[in-house]
Image (cartoon, rainbow, N blue to C red; front, side):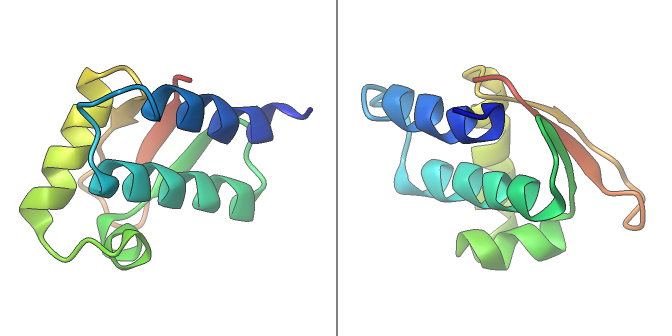
Length: 95
């Protein structure tokens, strides 16, 4: 199994046993993973909130930030925010 596929498999195995995660967390994580695969990355991807929110079906900016912060706090991802739209924030998968 290639490493990028293992990211999603390990996440879903962990998420199934983690009562702290909501569907919005899972949707956000899988959307970030989708962008990783789409760009051909191995373990990190550049994202923008503007592109990621509709993909994850999250309509509230506060929900987006809460889910992102909680995924970081729970150790699923490493998030390096960028305030430059053209550069994009960096996400590294921790699973």
